[in-house]
Length: 186
Image (cartoon, rainbow, N blue to C red; front, side):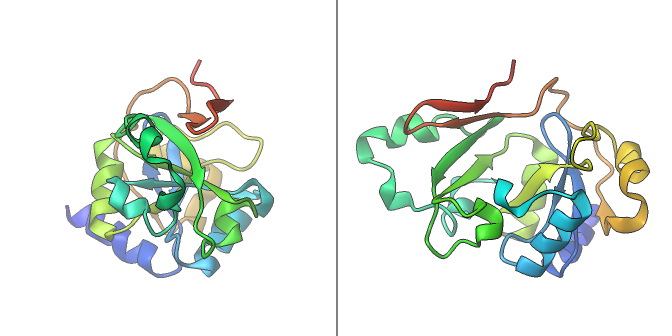
């Protein structure tokens, strides 16, 4: 747990960290810190209009970002039944959420991960974490800490030395309110 504490302290500042997710390593930072988000986007060479995913240990960590009241009561069970697991959902965003996270949309991509190292990191932070694949835009995502080091050198403030969940593909991305699939896991 000392390793996770170090990552949490780094991420709380303006740091960019790398950590294992279900299939690949993710780059992350504090989603409340626009300076850190801008740094992550610059490091990855990712356009801000693409938006970013947030991961969390549980749904309550996503409530500052998701407009929960916009999810109809009759759809709530089916929407939340995807989690914890390797499915990223597109949900209504609160108006206060940074456009760096939403890409300027009225929605936000979020996931309650089932991958224990990432969940433990979110628990240690006490909030959700930005999650985008650890790679330069257009390159293959890193699947190990060593691959993160090769792509980013010492530009990343901290790399969690743990294993991914072993999934072959990045998580599925769907809008559970419209059933639109943005990225399939096949």
